[in-house]
Structure formats: C-alpha cells, structure tokens
Image (cartoon, rainbow, N blue to C red; front, side, top):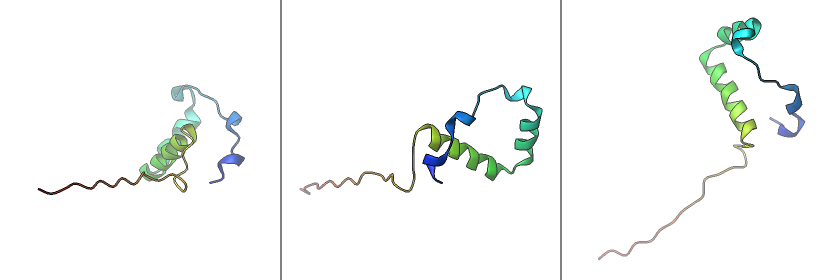
Length: 65
C-alpha cells in the first residue's frame, strides 16, 4: 500500500446507524475482510508501516554462579 497516495481528506466520521448502505456493505463482508479493514485503518491512524517497522533486538548477558 502506498500511504503517500491516500487522500485522507476524502474520509468523514458519521454514525453507522444513519448509513444503511454502509451497514449492509460491512455485513456482507467476511470477518477476515472486516479485520483487514480495521487493521488498515489502524495503520493509517498511527502511521505504521509493517514493512519498515521492526521490534528492537535486546541482548542480555548474565553471569552464572
């Protein structure tokens, strides 16, 4: 996904109960597709790119007695 090309101004926040078409759309999606959409929104919100982010490597040395 190219995050730079995403137009973040094209989104709006509204009550899902008022949007019958949106509700029907999401109810027609599989649970895997819904979770993928939530993950996509989470990555957009927190500016997270799984291809570049990695966990920090930690190495500890302990002397045995």
